[in-house]
Amino acid sequence: MTKWRGAALTLLLGLSAQPVSAQKTIIGVTDTEIKIGQSAPFSGPASVYGQISTAESDYFKMINDQGGINGRKINLIALDDGYSPPKTIEVVRRLIEEDQVAILFQTLGTASNAAIRKYVNQKKVPDIWIGSGASMFVTDPKEFPWTIPFQPSYRLEGQMYAKYILEHKPNARIGILYQNDDLGRDYVNGLKDGLGDKFDNMVVKTLSYEVTDPTIDSQVLQLQAAGADLLFDASTPKFSAMSIRKVADIDWHPLHIIDSNGALVKPALESAGLDKSVGVMTAQYLKDPTDPGWADDAGMKEYQAWRAQYAPESDPANPVWSYGYTMAQALVVVLKQAGNDLSRENIMKAATNLPDTTTLPMVLPGIKISTSPTDYRPMKSLRLVQFDGKMFKLVPE
Image 1 (spheres, rainbow, N blue to C red):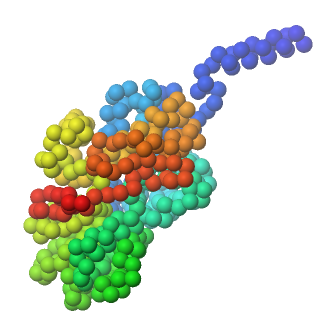
Image 2 (cartoon, helix red, strand yellow):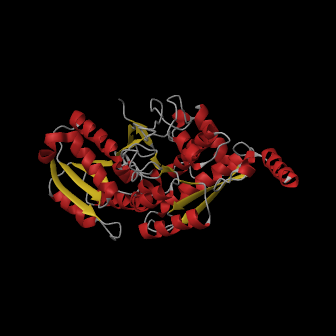
């Protein structure tokens, strides 16, 4: 009995002497690493967004070179899902069940996130800063407590365009072209919200397209024939480029409003032709690296220094780089706030308790960032901008 007690005491003393990390295994976390998973469209109809993941990886490389987060290096495992929801399910299962990641980060795409949301929440894996602004993700956090978006909702953005139209183009005849999925429908619903009982009188025709469609020429011609003088275009870059080009080719001159996802200077506007894109209006929440007005801005200088050292292949005119940079920064804020407890529960607690003093260097002035356990959406507004042939310029408020 004495020997047994002595052995037991030795065992207990040995356990208490071990570091906390050795006593409790945290999935995806070691004393030197935190493993993060991501599904991204490196191929498929939205492959232009694959560079977002590249930017995030490049940012984490800088953080790792600086010593990581509390001594832990970030290991981002990004798998191609081709912007296909069935493939997203496949790669996310692999990330969680085989790669044993601590969290998911910036899983890209509205339909893709809708496909994995129930599974991710059943597994209780934080999905931080999902890459979608669809209003379906702005739900009661009690329903899907492990999924948290970042950007303003598409519906809110649609409401902003409606407000502008009512103030500046109250007699507009609106033609709507939208991607036939939750992204496109959200923007249309936001426009309906903002126009209210004037929606039916102001909208002369509404048409959709599928992401598999080879062209949208027919839709653009029909909207012109309906007499629209304002084209509301809820698209992704490939299709917004098609619409800009077709509008110019048929010598149609509506006010062309394109959602923030579709109105990327590169590749959308550049592909369509910068001269053909003059006057395009959209919304933004990040500073434009090509705008000389930000040249002396401290946040812009920090971004440009990162580009020069860690992302020399990046194109400052392509906003996916500044977006990926900012999303990676926002995750680092969360991981630092979580401290040395990188359990899934504590990381989620940190992500849903961002103080209203949170700042990110590339976010436009006046846009506040904060979260709470009852309000998961960190960013709650945008600014309207219009393309002048070289860059987007802020529309005076």
